[in-house]
Length: 235
Image 1: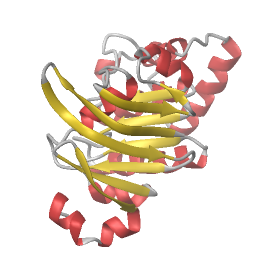
Image 2 (image 1 turned 90 degrees about the vertical axis):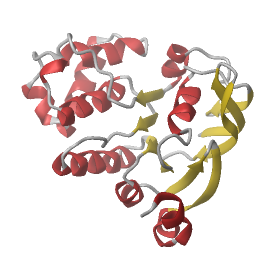
Image 3 (image 1 turned 60 degrees about the horizontal axis):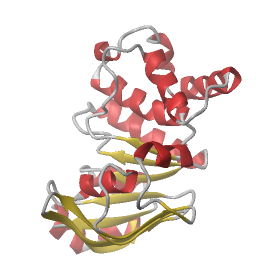
Protein backbone atom coordinates (compact mmCIF):
# COMPACT_ATOMS: atom_id res chain seq x y z
CA UNK A 1 0.00 0.00 0.00
CA UNK A 2 2.82 2.37 0.94
CA UNK A 3 6.45 2.13 -0.06
CA UNK A 4 9.63 4.17 0.28
CA UNK A 5 12.53 3.08 -1.92
CA UNK A 6 16.09 4.28 -1.39
CA UNK A 7 14.91 7.65 -0.06
CA UNK A 8 17.54 10.29 0.73
CA UNK A 9 16.41 13.53 2.39
CA UNK A 10 17.55 16.25 4.76
CA UNK A 11 17.44 19.93 5.68
CA UNK A 12 19.38 22.44 3.62
CA UNK A 13 22.70 20.78 2.86
CA UNK A 14 22.48 18.44 5.87
CA UNK A 15 21.54 14.85 5.01
CA UNK A 16 19.35 12.97 7.49
CA UNK A 17 17.99 9.96 5.57
CA UNK A 18 20.44 7.73 3.72
CA UNK A 19 18.66 5.41 1.29
CA UNK A 20 15.72 4.41 3.46
CA UNK A 21 13.49 1.64 2.13
CA UNK A 22 10.37 0.32 3.85
CA UNK A 23 6.89 -0.82 3.01
CA UNK A 24 3.51 -1.09 4.70
CA UNK A 25 0.95 -3.55 3.41
CA UNK A 26 -2.75 -2.82 3.45
CA UNK A 27 -4.33 -3.46 6.84
CA UNK A 28 -1.04 -3.64 8.72
CA UNK A 29 0.23 -1.62 11.63
CA UNK A 30 3.99 -1.18 11.26
CA UNK A 31 6.30 0.34 13.88
CA UNK A 32 9.29 2.55 13.11
CA UNK A 33 11.53 2.41 16.17
CA UNK A 34 14.72 4.16 17.14
CA UNK A 35 16.22 6.51 19.66
CA UNK A 36 15.80 10.29 19.43
CA UNK A 37 17.65 12.01 16.61
CA UNK A 38 17.81 8.98 14.31
CA UNK A 39 15.67 10.46 11.51
CA UNK A 40 12.24 9.03 12.25
CA UNK A 41 10.36 12.34 12.22
CA UNK A 42 12.26 13.42 9.10
CA UNK A 43 11.02 10.23 7.45
CA UNK A 44 7.43 11.11 8.37
CA UNK A 45 7.80 14.66 7.05
CA UNK A 46 9.18 13.29 3.79
CA UNK A 47 6.42 10.71 3.49
CA UNK A 48 3.67 13.31 3.84
CA UNK A 49 5.32 15.89 1.55
CA UNK A 50 6.61 18.51 3.99
CA UNK A 51 10.13 17.62 2.84
CA UNK A 52 10.96 16.63 -0.73
CA UNK A 53 13.30 13.66 -1.08
CA UNK A 54 16.64 14.32 -2.69
CA UNK A 55 16.58 10.91 -4.30
CA UNK A 56 14.40 7.82 -4.23
CA UNK A 57 10.69 7.09 -4.63
CA UNK A 58 7.61 7.22 -2.39
CA UNK A 59 4.43 5.45 -3.49
CA UNK A 60 0.93 5.09 -2.11
CA UNK A 61 -1.36 2.54 -3.75
CA UNK A 62 0.95 2.56 -6.77
CA UNK A 63 0.91 6.34 -7.17
CA UNK A 64 4.10 8.38 -7.01
CA UNK A 65 3.97 10.88 -4.11
CA UNK A 66 7.48 12.21 -4.57
CA UNK A 67 6.57 15.66 -5.92
CA UNK A 68 3.04 16.06 -4.56
CA UNK A 69 2.09 18.76 -2.05
CA UNK A 70 0.95 17.65 1.43
CA UNK A 71 -2.70 18.60 0.78
CA UNK A 72 -2.73 16.52 -2.39
CA UNK A 73 -1.28 13.55 -0.51
CA UNK A 74 -3.95 13.98 2.17
CA UNK A 75 -6.69 13.92 -0.46
CA UNK A 76 -5.37 10.60 -1.75
CA UNK A 77 -6.05 9.07 1.69
CA UNK A 78 -2.86 9.58 3.72
CA UNK A 79 -3.27 11.23 7.12
CA UNK A 80 -0.69 12.47 9.62
CA UNK A 81 -1.00 12.56 13.40
CA UNK A 82 2.04 14.77 14.04
CA UNK A 83 4.41 14.87 16.97
CA UNK A 84 3.02 17.14 19.73
CA UNK A 85 -0.46 16.74 18.19
CA UNK A 86 -0.61 20.18 16.47
CA UNK A 87 -4.33 20.73 16.94
CA UNK A 88 -5.68 24.27 16.49
CA UNK A 89 -5.78 25.52 20.10
CA UNK A 90 -8.15 28.44 19.51
CA UNK A 91 -10.72 26.38 17.60
CA UNK A 92 -13.31 24.20 19.26
CA UNK A 93 -13.20 20.41 19.15
CA UNK A 94 -16.01 20.49 16.58
CA UNK A 95 -14.13 22.98 14.38
CA UNK A 96 -10.94 20.92 14.56
CA UNK A 97 -12.85 17.84 13.48
CA UNK A 98 -14.64 19.60 10.63
CA UNK A 99 -11.32 20.93 9.35
CA UNK A 100 -10.22 17.33 8.97
CA UNK A 101 -13.19 16.69 6.72
CA UNK A 102 -12.76 19.83 4.62
CA UNK A 103 -8.98 19.33 4.26
CA UNK A 104 -9.73 16.11 2.41
CA UNK A 105 -11.98 18.04 0.00
CA UNK A 106 -15.18 16.58 1.45
CA UNK A 107 -17.98 18.77 2.83
CA UNK A 108 -21.13 16.65 2.63
CA UNK A 109 -23.36 17.08 5.68
CA UNK A 110 -24.35 13.41 5.65
CA UNK A 111 -20.73 12.33 5.47
CA UNK A 112 -19.84 14.69 8.32
CA UNK A 113 -22.49 13.17 10.57
CA UNK A 114 -21.47 9.61 9.68
CA UNK A 115 -17.83 10.27 10.47
CA UNK A 116 -18.62 12.22 13.63
CA UNK A 117 -20.66 9.25 14.85
CA UNK A 118 -17.68 6.95 14.22
CA UNK A 119 -15.35 9.32 16.07
CA UNK A 120 -17.66 9.52 19.07
CA UNK A 121 -17.97 5.76 19.18
CA UNK A 122 -14.23 5.51 19.78
CA UNK A 123 -13.70 8.80 21.63
CA UNK A 124 -16.90 9.55 23.58
CA UNK A 125 -15.00 12.12 25.61
CA UNK A 126 -14.75 14.35 22.53
CA UNK A 127 -18.54 14.45 22.24
CA UNK A 128 -18.66 15.89 25.76
CA UNK A 129 -16.17 18.60 24.77
CA UNK A 130 -17.40 19.57 21.30
CA UNK A 131 -17.71 23.26 22.08
CA UNK A 132 -14.52 23.58 24.12
CA UNK A 133 -11.42 25.21 22.59
CA UNK A 134 -8.71 22.69 21.83
CA UNK A 135 -6.30 24.42 24.21
CA UNK A 136 -8.52 23.52 27.19
CA UNK A 137 -8.17 19.77 26.60
CA UNK A 138 -5.71 17.58 28.47
CA UNK A 139 -2.74 16.17 26.58
CA UNK A 140 -4.47 12.82 26.20
CA UNK A 141 -7.66 14.45 24.93
CA UNK A 142 -5.67 16.52 22.44
CA UNK A 143 -4.09 13.30 21.15
CA UNK A 144 -7.55 11.78 20.75
CA UNK A 145 -8.56 14.87 18.80
CA UNK A 146 -5.50 14.64 16.53
CA UNK A 147 -6.33 11.01 15.69
CA UNK A 148 -10.02 11.78 15.27
CA UNK A 149 -9.19 14.61 12.86
CA UNK A 150 -7.53 12.22 10.39
CA UNK A 151 -10.39 9.78 10.86
CA UNK A 152 -12.73 12.58 9.79
CA UNK A 153 -10.64 12.99 6.65
CA UNK A 154 -11.23 9.33 5.77
CA UNK A 155 -7.53 8.47 5.77
CA UNK A 156 -6.79 4.89 4.70
CA UNK A 157 -3.17 5.17 5.79
CA UNK A 158 -2.40 7.01 9.03
CA UNK A 159 1.13 8.09 9.91
CA UNK A 160 1.49 8.55 13.68
CA UNK A 161 4.49 10.34 15.17
CA UNK A 162 4.98 9.59 18.89
CA UNK A 163 1.27 9.45 19.82
CA UNK A 164 1.90 8.38 23.45
CA UNK A 165 4.63 10.91 24.20
CA UNK A 166 4.08 12.60 27.55
CA UNK A 167 0.77 10.85 28.26
CA UNK A 168 -0.40 9.22 31.48
CA UNK A 169 -0.53 5.40 31.47
CA UNK A 170 -4.33 5.32 31.14
CA UNK A 171 -4.21 7.44 27.98
CA UNK A 172 -1.32 5.37 26.61
CA UNK A 173 -3.47 2.25 26.92
CA UNK A 174 -6.34 4.04 25.22
CA UNK A 175 -4.18 5.13 22.29
CA UNK A 176 -2.76 1.60 21.97
CA UNK A 177 -6.27 0.17 21.93
CA UNK A 178 -7.30 2.79 19.37
CA UNK A 179 -4.51 1.70 17.02
CA UNK A 180 -5.76 -1.86 17.34
CA UNK A 181 -9.27 -0.68 16.55
CA UNK A 182 -8.07 1.24 13.49
CA UNK A 183 -6.57 -2.02 12.23
CA UNK A 184 -9.88 -3.80 12.78
CA UNK A 185 -11.58 -1.04 10.78
CA UNK A 186 -9.19 -1.73 7.89
CA UNK A 187 -7.06 1.40 8.36
CA UNK A 188 -3.33 0.95 7.76
CA UNK A 189 -0.91 2.51 10.29
CA UNK A 190 2.76 3.50 10.22
CA UNK A 191 3.70 4.27 13.82
CA UNK A 192 6.73 6.09 15.19
CA UNK A 193 6.91 5.36 18.88
CA UNK A 194 9.59 5.77 21.56
CA UNK A 195 7.75 3.26 23.75
CA UNK A 196 8.82 0.11 21.92
CA UNK A 197 6.83 -2.18 24.22
CA UNK A 198 3.60 -0.37 23.39
CA UNK A 199 4.39 -0.28 19.66
CA UNK A 200 5.28 -3.96 19.44
CA UNK A 201 2.21 -4.96 21.43
CA UNK A 202 -0.10 -3.61 18.71
CA UNK A 203 1.95 -3.65 15.48
CA UNK A 204 2.45 -6.56 13.11
CA UNK A 205 6.01 -5.72 12.07
CA UNK A 206 8.66 -3.18 12.80
CA UNK A 207 11.77 -1.45 11.54
CA UNK A 208 14.63 -0.10 13.64
CA UNK A 209 16.25 3.10 12.40
CA UNK A 210 19.70 4.30 13.39
CA UNK A 211 21.42 7.43 12.05
CA UNK A 212 19.09 7.73 9.07
CA UNK A 213 19.35 4.08 8.01
CA UNK A 214 17.07 1.07 8.54
CA UNK A 215 19.26 -1.41 10.41
CA UNK A 216 16.79 -4.19 11.25
CA UNK A 217 13.36 -5.40 10.16
CA UNK A 218 11.32 -8.24 11.65
CA UNK A 219 7.92 -9.27 12.94
CA UNK A 220 6.91 -7.75 16.27
CA UNK A 221 7.43 -11.10 17.99
CA UNK A 222 10.95 -11.39 16.59
CA UNK A 223 11.72 -7.82 17.57
CA UNK A 224 10.55 -8.41 21.12
CA UNK A 225 12.87 -11.42 21.41
CA UNK A 226 15.86 -10.13 19.45
CA UNK A 227 19.07 -9.01 21.18
CA UNK A 228 19.34 -6.41 18.41
CA UNK A 229 16.28 -4.63 19.83
CA UNK A 230 17.87 -4.51 23.27
CA UNK A 231 21.15 -3.32 21.78
CA UNK A 232 19.64 -0.56 19.63
CA UNK A 233 16.74 0.56 21.83
CA UNK A 234 17.78 -0.49 25.32
CA UNK A 235 14.57 -2.49 25.92
